[in-house]
Image 1 (cartoon, rainbow, N blue to C red):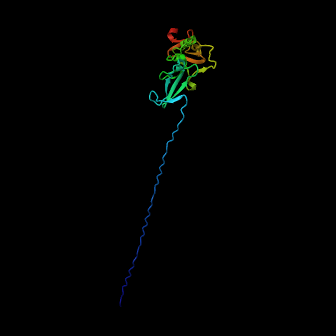
Image 2 (image 1 turned 180 degrees about the vertical axis):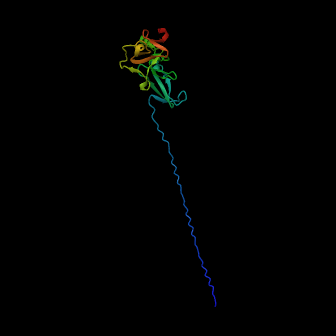
Image 3 (image 1 turned 90 degrees about the vertical axis):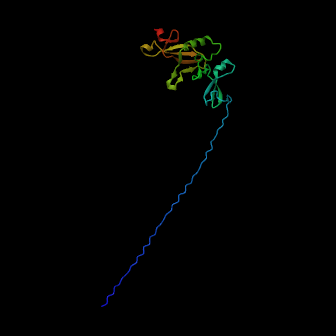
Length: 208
Protein backbone atom coordinates (compact mmCIF):
# COMPACT_ATOMS: atom_id res chain seq x y z
CA UNK A 1 0.00 0.00 0.00
CA UNK A 2 1.46 3.20 -1.01
CA UNK A 3 0.37 6.47 0.67
CA UNK A 4 0.79 9.84 -1.03
CA UNK A 5 0.82 13.09 1.02
CA UNK A 6 -0.43 15.93 -1.02
CA UNK A 7 0.45 19.40 0.22
CA UNK A 8 -1.48 22.32 -1.18
CA UNK A 9 0.00 25.77 -0.77
CA UNK A 10 -2.32 28.77 -1.19
CA UNK A 11 -0.77 32.16 -1.75
CA UNK A 12 -2.91 35.27 -1.10
CA UNK A 13 -1.76 38.61 -2.51
CA UNK A 14 -3.20 41.72 -0.76
CA UNK A 15 -2.87 45.06 -2.52
CA UNK A 16 -3.27 48.25 -0.37
CA UNK A 17 -4.01 51.48 -2.22
CA UNK A 18 -3.31 54.79 -0.37
CA UNK A 19 -4.95 57.97 -1.75
CA UNK A 20 -3.45 61.37 -0.71
CA UNK A 21 -5.57 64.49 -1.26
CA UNK A 22 -3.73 67.85 -1.30
CA UNK A 23 -5.82 71.03 -0.87
CA UNK A 24 -4.28 74.34 -1.89
CA UNK A 25 -5.82 77.58 -0.46
CA UNK A 26 -5.08 80.80 -2.25
CA UNK A 27 -5.61 84.08 -0.29
CA UNK A 28 -6.12 87.26 -2.27
CA UNK A 29 -5.53 90.61 -0.46
CA UNK A 30 -7.09 93.72 -1.92
CA UNK A 31 -5.70 97.07 -0.76
CA UNK A 32 -7.97 100.12 -1.11
CA UNK A 33 -6.43 103.58 -0.87
CA UNK A 34 -8.74 106.42 0.17
CA UNK A 35 -7.74 109.86 -0.96
CA UNK A 36 -9.00 112.53 1.50
CA UNK A 37 -11.22 115.15 -0.03
CA UNK A 38 -10.50 118.76 0.85
CA UNK A 39 -13.30 121.27 0.48
CA UNK A 40 -12.30 124.89 0.09
CA UNK A 41 -14.94 127.50 0.81
CA UNK A 42 -14.85 131.17 -0.06
CA UNK A 43 -14.09 133.55 2.81
CA UNK A 44 -17.09 135.89 3.36
CA UNK A 45 -16.62 139.63 2.93
CA UNK A 46 -16.80 140.20 6.72
CA UNK A 47 -13.95 137.74 7.41
CA UNK A 48 -10.18 137.51 6.96
CA UNK A 49 -7.47 134.94 7.68
CA UNK A 50 -5.11 135.52 10.59
CA UNK A 51 -3.87 133.49 13.55
CA UNK A 52 -6.23 133.50 16.54
CA UNK A 53 -4.66 135.63 19.27
CA UNK A 54 -4.64 132.94 21.96
CA UNK A 55 -3.43 130.14 19.71
CA UNK A 56 -6.57 127.96 19.95
CA UNK A 57 -8.92 126.64 17.28
CA UNK A 58 -11.63 128.89 18.71
CA UNK A 59 -14.04 130.24 19.19
CA UNK A 60 -12.16 133.27 20.49
CA UNK A 61 -13.89 136.64 20.87
CA UNK A 62 -12.42 140.15 20.64
CA UNK A 63 -13.90 143.58 21.02
CA UNK A 64 -13.91 145.73 17.89
CA UNK A 65 -10.91 148.06 17.78
CA UNK A 66 -12.20 150.67 15.33
CA UNK A 67 -12.19 154.35 16.21
CA UNK A 68 -15.98 154.84 16.45
CA UNK A 69 -16.83 154.35 20.17
CA UNK A 70 -20.42 153.31 19.39
CA UNK A 71 -19.33 150.48 17.12
CA UNK A 72 -16.44 149.60 19.43
CA UNK A 73 -19.09 148.48 21.88
CA UNK A 74 -21.58 146.95 19.46
CA UNK A 75 -19.28 145.11 17.04
CA UNK A 76 -16.94 142.22 17.82
CA UNK A 77 -14.80 139.58 16.12
CA UNK A 78 -15.03 135.80 16.43
CA UNK A 79 -12.02 133.69 15.44
CA UNK A 80 -12.36 130.00 14.47
CA UNK A 81 -9.48 128.01 12.96
CA UNK A 82 -7.58 131.25 12.20
CA UNK A 83 -10.49 132.88 10.38
CA UNK A 84 -11.70 136.16 11.90
CA UNK A 85 -15.29 137.27 11.22
CA UNK A 86 -16.87 140.54 12.24
CA UNK A 87 -20.31 140.45 13.90
CA UNK A 88 -22.68 143.06 15.35
CA UNK A 89 -24.93 142.83 18.38
CA UNK A 90 -28.65 143.42 17.88
CA UNK A 91 -29.79 147.01 18.16
CA UNK A 92 -29.70 148.26 21.76
CA UNK A 93 -27.13 145.67 22.90
CA UNK A 94 -23.38 145.97 23.30
CA UNK A 95 -20.65 143.34 23.43
CA UNK A 96 -19.25 142.21 26.77
CA UNK A 97 -15.68 141.01 26.16
CA UNK A 98 -14.88 139.90 29.70
CA UNK A 99 -13.31 136.44 29.64
CA UNK A 100 -15.89 133.75 30.26
CA UNK A 101 -18.74 136.28 29.95
CA UNK A 102 -18.51 137.11 26.25
CA UNK A 103 -21.80 138.00 24.60
CA UNK A 104 -24.23 140.74 23.60
CA UNK A 105 -25.93 142.27 26.61
CA UNK A 106 -27.85 145.31 27.78
CA UNK A 107 -25.43 148.25 28.21
CA UNK A 108 -25.88 148.57 32.00
CA UNK A 109 -24.73 144.94 32.33
CA UNK A 110 -21.47 145.67 30.47
CA UNK A 111 -19.43 147.98 32.70
CA UNK A 112 -16.35 147.41 30.54
CA UNK A 113 -17.86 149.19 27.53
CA UNK A 114 -19.86 152.36 28.01
CA UNK A 115 -21.27 154.36 25.15
CA UNK A 116 -20.56 158.11 25.55
CA UNK A 117 -23.39 160.52 26.25
CA UNK A 118 -25.48 158.33 28.56
CA UNK A 119 -28.92 159.81 29.10
CA UNK A 120 -31.00 159.84 32.28
CA UNK A 121 -32.73 156.63 31.18
CA UNK A 122 -29.35 154.89 30.98
CA UNK A 123 -28.43 155.96 34.48
CA UNK A 124 -31.80 154.93 35.93
CA UNK A 125 -31.77 151.53 34.21
CA UNK A 126 -28.22 150.93 35.41
CA UNK A 127 -29.29 151.69 38.99
CA UNK A 128 -32.08 149.09 38.85
CA UNK A 129 -29.81 146.45 37.32
CA UNK A 130 -27.12 146.73 39.96
CA UNK A 131 -26.57 143.46 41.86
CA UNK A 132 -28.93 141.58 39.52
CA UNK A 133 -28.77 139.43 36.39
CA UNK A 134 -31.11 138.50 33.56
CA UNK A 135 -33.34 135.50 34.33
CA UNK A 136 -32.69 132.45 32.13
CA UNK A 137 -35.60 130.42 30.79
CA UNK A 138 -35.05 126.77 31.84
CA UNK A 139 -37.67 125.58 29.36
CA UNK A 140 -35.85 127.25 26.45
CA UNK A 141 -32.29 125.95 26.94
CA UNK A 142 -31.45 128.74 29.40
CA UNK A 143 -32.08 131.57 26.95
CA UNK A 144 -32.36 135.06 28.48
CA UNK A 145 -35.96 136.03 29.22
CA UNK A 146 -35.90 139.19 27.11
CA UNK A 147 -38.04 140.50 24.28
CA UNK A 148 -37.43 143.38 21.91
CA UNK A 149 -39.95 145.90 20.65
CA UNK A 150 -39.43 147.06 17.08
CA UNK A 151 -40.43 150.52 18.23
CA UNK A 152 -37.23 150.71 20.23
CA UNK A 153 -38.97 152.40 23.15
CA UNK A 154 -40.56 151.46 26.47
CA UNK A 155 -43.62 152.61 28.36
CA UNK A 156 -41.97 151.74 31.69
CA UNK A 157 -38.46 151.31 33.09
CA UNK A 158 -38.98 149.24 36.24
CA UNK A 159 -41.71 146.83 37.43
CA UNK A 160 -41.56 144.47 40.44
CA UNK A 161 -42.67 140.89 39.74
CA UNK A 162 -44.43 139.21 42.66
CA UNK A 163 -45.07 135.52 43.25
CA UNK A 164 -47.73 133.57 45.13
CA UNK A 165 -48.55 132.80 48.73
CA UNK A 166 -48.50 134.96 51.85
CA UNK A 167 -44.88 136.06 51.37
CA UNK A 168 -44.84 136.14 47.58
CA UNK A 169 -47.37 138.95 47.58
CA UNK A 170 -44.99 141.45 49.16
CA UNK A 171 -41.48 139.90 48.99
CA UNK A 172 -39.67 139.24 45.74
CA UNK A 173 -36.26 138.97 44.15
CA UNK A 174 -37.50 139.46 40.58
CA UNK A 175 -38.45 142.47 38.51
CA UNK A 176 -38.72 143.66 34.92
CA UNK A 177 -36.63 146.34 33.31
CA UNK A 178 -37.35 147.92 29.94
CA UNK A 179 -34.40 149.64 28.33
CA UNK A 180 -34.27 151.06 24.79
CA UNK A 181 -36.90 148.60 23.56
CA UNK A 182 -35.52 145.58 25.42
CA UNK A 183 -37.79 144.18 28.16
CA UNK A 184 -36.04 141.70 30.46
CA UNK A 185 -36.84 139.75 33.58
CA UNK A 186 -34.17 140.34 36.21
CA UNK A 187 -33.33 138.54 39.45
CA UNK A 188 -31.40 139.87 42.44
CA UNK A 189 -28.07 138.23 43.21
CA UNK A 190 -27.90 135.58 45.94
CA UNK A 191 -28.63 136.89 49.45
CA UNK A 192 -30.36 140.05 48.21
CA UNK A 193 -34.02 141.00 47.98
CA UNK A 194 -35.81 143.64 45.93
CA UNK A 195 -36.73 146.92 47.56
CA UNK A 196 -39.73 148.04 45.46
CA UNK A 197 -39.52 151.61 46.75
CA UNK A 198 -35.99 152.23 45.51
CA UNK A 199 -36.12 149.61 42.77
CA UNK A 200 -32.82 148.13 43.91
CA UNK A 201 -31.57 144.78 45.16
CA UNK A 202 -30.46 145.19 48.76
CA UNK A 203 -29.42 142.95 51.69
CA UNK A 204 -32.49 141.55 53.39
CA UNK A 205 -31.52 142.93 56.78
CA UNK A 206 -31.72 146.50 55.51
CA UNK A 207 -35.42 146.00 54.66
CA UNK A 208 -36.54 144.46 57.95
